[in-house]
Length: 352
Image 1 (spheres, rainbow, N blue to C red):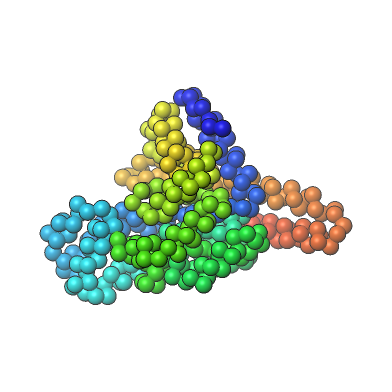
Image 2: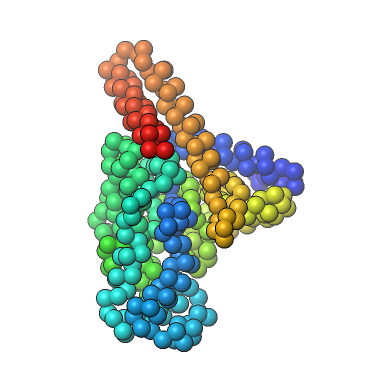
């Protein structure tokens, strides 16, 4: 049944959606989709900033004429990226690879508290369009069992991921759907690279369609841009099933002025649910010295994690006096999880 919005109800709806999402996460049948916004606080560029950076790289290090760069700025962002890549490769063939590697390589600080809180939640798998490996570093820090890192070029590993979608205890995969910085052949950044990934074969379209239609998904660090192929696939899923109730969720930061504008919030909510079948949990974003401040995202992630942690503690308490060997093993496994979480929290406090 479709919710009826009024201008006084969206804050209550926000809380209700957050509660529904937490319950879904606790079920374990959930996948996380991580965008560039999660890596920006660690000084990695957003997709839009990457275009500006590669243009400056072309001018400064590859001696591309600035007038040639200006000529292609009217193109859409994928064609613009392709145009810069073509100009670079005419001057220095391997410089595009150098740009990708140096821009997205590992840094001294490779994960944020937000990454760690996110990876401690019981997502079955994590998908990302990011080229960096911040998720892998966070996963290594907070979990006993390391996830498998794969990219879209590794078809056998992607097939194994699809086979594992129905298994509750399968090993978590971190799936880089647009490649990883140290494998230039896997990078999907320009229009022709998008064509290779999505149009030359139906394999990636079918893979994402399968995940989006069989799993509930939480999007974090994303803006839903219709230029992106995976967003078109999300829209197709909405069209194919025409669900009345939104299937997926997003932690969605909006400018503080829009956040306080009840009418604007309802407009954004209805747009996301109508076009993508995605229900937002809003949080306010401030301008901070010319940059966006998403500090409220951490408060939401911590609230989700605290609920998950309390749920695990209750399961331990419920199982501790049960006599069967299977249940004792389950309880011991839950204790190990809690010890790992405690050790991580203690390390975080010590380093603060």
